[in-house]
Every structure is written in structure tokens, then in C-alpha cells.
Image (cartoon, rainbow, N blue to C red; front, side):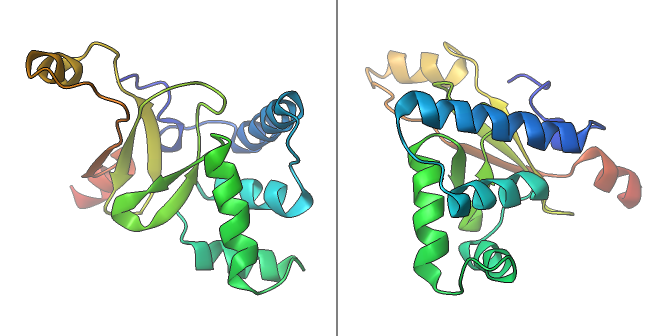
Length: 161
């Protein structure tokens, strides 16, 4: 896994991070000829602001506060679109969503979930790594990989010490 993609655990320009991701998402949607509607864009922005996994109802509350409505399908449809377009991921363990750190790239992510503060970082798995070799040895063809790892981020480790 590459550590460079674990931005939420390190100091970075968060506003720049959000701006760059939104610009890339707009370009990706335009290239695919799909609409990044205002509610979809705001949903992505909410996920980008959080750097933590958010449940659909957390997103819905923020959308409602921003005037997009309070009916659950508003959030669920926007989140489904973002996942379908590779702009967000669903974290199964948390039944929540995070913005994709590598939007538009064909990749198999690994999620580093801090059990202390709830921050989620996305790292990439290494093609041909140990999991791929074990699957190949068993004659198994991997079609999709989702890895979720729970532990403590550097900040929470310091606080625990």
C-alpha cells in the first residue's frame, strides 16, 4: 500500500484537497457525459470535508441544512451516483461512505479506519501483492477487492500514550 494516499492522517492543505477533488470530479463527469447535479456535487463536497466515513443520514442532515430536502432518497440517490462513478466508496464495516482519494482510477482500495477518531484514509493495494499471489496459487480469480483495516491514526496513538 502507498502511504502517500493516507492524507487524512497527515498535515495537508484541506481546502486545496477539496477544490482539486471537486474540479477532477467535474471533469470526469463531463468526460463521461453524466451530470454532477448540485445535490450530487454538494454530497461529494460533504464527504470530502469530513475525511471520515459518513452514514447516509449524516449526509442527508447536511443536505437538508443546505436546502436540498430531507427525504432519504435525496441522499441515497446522490451517494449511489457517486459510488457508481467511482467518486466515493461504501465502507461496509461502518455502513457509511467516503470520498474516493483516487477518483477516476481503476483501483482496489484499502481503507484505514481509525477506531479513535473515525478518520478514514484510502490507500491502494499493490497489484500482484500477497493477496493476489495467494489467490493465484489457489486458482482463484479476484474480480474485486475491498480491504478495511481498523486501528489508530498517529494523533490517536499520541493521545493514548
